[in-house]
Structure formats: C-alpha cells, structure tokens
Image (spheres, rainbow, N blue to C red):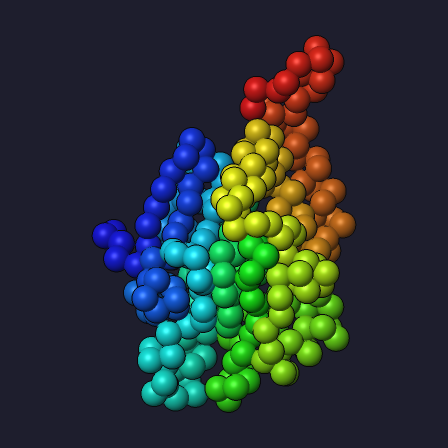
Length: 257
C-alpha cells in the first residue's frame, strides 16, 4: 500500500508510525484510518518488529481528533458502521496486538486522537500536551472506545467529568490521573519512547505477548482474567524462551531471546 498520510521509520527492531497530516493537526480521515489499519497489521505480522511507537508529525499535535468533514452527513446506521469499523480495524487491533504499541504524544491528543493513544499499551506525553474527549460539544460521544478505555484508566468519576464536560486536561493532570505513564520535555520524547520500547524488546517476545493477553483478559467481562493468567503462565513453560531465560539466570548472564 502506498501511504499518503503515514510515514514509517524503522530503527533496529522498533518501528515508528507517524501520522502525517500536519496541516490538519494530524486529524484522522478515512484514508488515514485505512492506512493505519494496513500499517498496524503489517507491523504485528512482521517478526523483525518487536515494538511500535505511534506519533504525529510536527510539534503541535499527536492527533487532534477525527476529520469532521468525513462524518458530517452520516445518518444513524452509518455512524454505527463508522465506529464499528474503526474499532475493529484500528483501535482494537492495537489494543490486542501481540507486541507493545507506545503512544508518543507530541501535542494535542483530542477525541479520536486520545482514543488512539488509549488503545496503545503505554503512553508518553510531552509536558505541553493537552488531552481530552470534546465530542459532546459536537452533539456526539466518543465512538472509538473512549468511554470504555478512559474509565478503565482513570476511573468512573474522572472519566465522566472529562467526557461530559469535553474539557482538555494538561499532561501533568493526565499523569496524576494515570492516563499517561510519563511526562517528558519535548526534546527527549522519542528517546524516552525508544528506551521503553527497546527494554521491552530485550525480553522474551513470547512472554510479552502472553502478558498482554492476560492483562486484556482481566478487562474483558466475558473472560476470567485469573484463568487466562494461569493458562498463559503454563504456556510459558513449553517455550524455548523459558529454557533460555532460566539458563541465563543460572549462568549469571543476559538471556539471548
């Protein structure tokens, strides 16, 4: 696929996906979502990629929301289809990915942009970032998992305040809420994200995948998270990574996964 709104940069085993619509504050239109779906699926399937950093072009916005022109004329059923396809092809694809996705939030993360960041496993934000779900100001609610993932991350009260008011919060508030993992100076955003990604990449990819599955299972009311963890724990014992990890520990050396 030829990308128009997305740039891809590989650094060793870490891939950076850069949403490149800087003139639109990297707003998500249909083309951007289609390109993200393709690039995310390709990154998950590519065994040489051990982690993915998702960010926006420029220094103003991660993603400032969805491109309103794309859905201004939709009816009820078309709105449902828009949300369902976005969830299935992009947001849930990241959420359930077998390798870590890290959001490097380099500016505004609003609406669909914050939902994109929340779908990632880890979030790092610059100190000047602003985050929010302003959909109610358009007569809408979040449609790409925002009501669910925000509540999981910050709790019901804070999630409702953000969603119902539509107000933005600062990066410092997001850190206090538990919405982001780290807040850093803009000059070290990507080095921080790369450091996290590389540290995870040095671990067993099989164990990382199973750990993500177990954590996600605990958030799914249709699953028993404890049973998912027990099963995943057991699976680890049958892998070469387990044998290498134990051997390295006993031999007092770094494992070679």
